[in-house]
Amino acid sequence: MANTPQSKKRARQIERRTDVNKARRSRIRTYLRKVEEAIASGDAAAAKTALQNAQPELMRGVTKGVVHKNTASRKVSRLAARVNALTTA
Image (cartoon, rainbow, N blue to C red; front, side):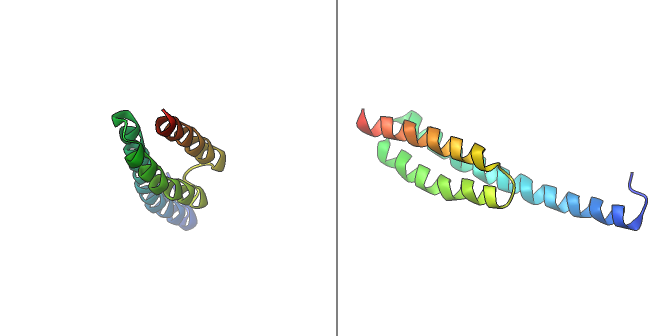
Protein backbone atom coordinates (compact mmCIF):
# COMPACT_ATOMS: atom_id res chain seq x y z
CA MET A 1 0.00 0.00 0.00
CA ALA A 2 1.16 3.55 -0.73
CA ASN A 3 2.71 5.36 2.26
CA THR A 4 4.23 8.62 1.08
CA PRO A 5 2.02 11.50 -0.11
CA GLN A 6 3.47 11.24 -3.62
CA SER A 7 2.81 7.51 -3.89
CA LYS A 8 -0.76 8.06 -2.60
CA LYS A 9 -1.27 10.71 -5.26
CA ARG A 10 0.15 8.42 -7.96
CA ALA A 11 -2.21 5.65 -6.85
CA ARG A 12 -5.17 8.04 -7.25
CA GLN A 13 -3.94 9.15 -10.67
CA ILE A 14 -3.46 5.55 -11.83
CA GLU A 15 -6.98 4.70 -10.70
CA ARG A 16 -8.46 7.55 -12.76
CA ARG A 17 -6.29 6.70 -15.78
CA THR A 18 -7.29 3.04 -15.57
CA ASP A 19 -10.97 3.97 -15.83
CA VAL A 20 -10.34 6.19 -18.86
CA ASN A 21 -8.20 3.56 -20.59
CA LYS A 22 -10.76 0.85 -19.87
CA ALA A 23 -13.46 2.97 -21.52
CA ARG A 24 -11.23 3.61 -24.55
CA ARG A 25 -10.38 -0.08 -24.92
CA SER A 26 -14.05 -0.99 -24.67
CA ARG A 27 -14.95 1.60 -27.32
CA ILE A 28 -12.29 0.21 -29.68
CA ARG A 29 -13.55 -3.34 -29.16
CA THR A 30 -17.11 -2.21 -29.94
CA TYR A 31 -16.00 -0.72 -33.26
CA LEU A 32 -14.04 -3.87 -34.11
CA ARG A 33 -17.04 -6.04 -33.24
CA LYS A 34 -19.23 -3.99 -35.60
CA VAL A 35 -16.77 -4.71 -38.43
CA GLU A 36 -16.73 -8.43 -37.54
CA GLU A 37 -20.53 -8.56 -37.52
CA ALA A 38 -20.75 -6.79 -40.89
CA ILE A 39 -18.25 -9.25 -42.37
CA ALA A 40 -20.17 -12.20 -40.91
CA SER A 41 -23.44 -10.92 -42.36
CA GLY A 42 -21.79 -10.72 -45.80
CA ASP A 43 -22.75 -7.07 -46.34
CA ALA A 44 -19.73 -5.60 -48.13
CA ALA A 45 -20.92 -1.98 -48.00
CA ALA A 46 -21.66 -2.13 -44.28
CA ALA A 47 -18.33 -3.84 -43.62
CA LYS A 48 -16.44 -1.15 -45.52
CA THR A 49 -18.24 1.63 -43.65
CA ALA A 50 -17.67 -0.08 -40.30
CA LEU A 51 -13.96 -0.47 -41.09
CA GLN A 52 -13.69 3.21 -42.03
CA ASN A 53 -15.25 4.10 -38.67
CA ALA A 54 -13.10 1.65 -36.70
CA GLN A 55 -9.76 2.66 -38.20
CA PRO A 56 -9.49 6.17 -36.69
CA GLU A 57 -10.75 4.85 -33.35
CA LEU A 58 -7.98 2.23 -33.28
CA MET A 59 -5.33 4.77 -34.20
CA ARG A 60 -6.63 7.15 -31.54
CA GLY A 61 -6.04 4.32 -29.08
CA VAL A 62 -2.45 4.21 -30.30
CA THR A 63 -1.88 7.92 -29.69
CA LYS A 64 -3.44 7.63 -26.23
CA GLY A 65 -1.21 4.68 -25.36
CA VAL A 66 -3.99 2.12 -24.95
CA VAL A 67 -2.97 -0.05 -27.91
CA HIS A 68 0.47 -0.64 -29.40
CA LYS A 69 1.03 0.80 -32.88
CA ASN A 70 1.90 -2.57 -34.45
CA THR A 71 -1.14 -4.23 -32.87
CA ALA A 72 -3.46 -1.59 -34.31
CA SER A 73 -1.81 -1.78 -37.73
CA ARG A 74 -2.08 -5.56 -37.73
CA LYS A 75 -5.77 -5.47 -36.81
CA VAL A 76 -6.57 -2.86 -39.47
CA SER A 77 -4.59 -4.78 -42.08
CA ARG A 78 -6.30 -8.10 -41.37
CA LEU A 79 -9.77 -6.56 -41.26
CA ALA A 80 -9.13 -4.66 -44.49
CA ALA A 81 -8.04 -7.87 -46.20
CA ARG A 82 -11.22 -9.62 -45.07
CA VAL A 83 -13.42 -6.71 -46.21
CA ASN A 84 -11.65 -6.64 -49.59
CA ALA A 85 -12.12 -10.39 -49.96
CA LEU A 86 -15.80 -9.85 -49.25
CA THR A 87 -16.09 -7.18 -51.96
CA THR A 88 -14.29 -9.18 -54.63
CA ALA A 89 -16.12 -12.43 -53.88
